[in-house]
Amino acid sequence: MSPVEAAKLLEVAPDCTPEQIEARFLELRAKLEDKIAKAPTPGLKDKYRATL
Image (cartoon, rainbow, N blue to C red; front, side, top):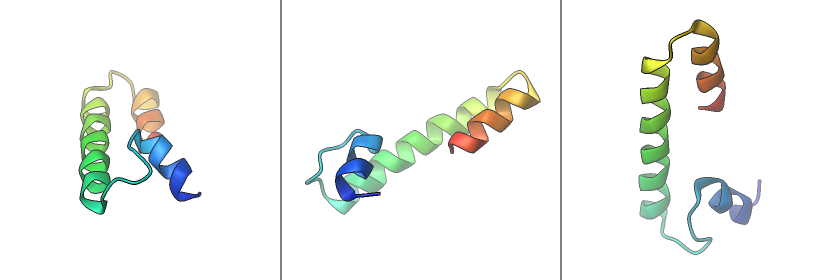
């Protein structure tokens, strides 16, 4: 994966700082972990874990 592709995946500018990248990653990870914790079925939990 190229830096441009990674930036697009994280929805950040390609020229952002490492600190901004890390902050965005942690934000997205927290959202997914919350979804995993609240998922009503084991299958949905597995789907969210695969995304993580």
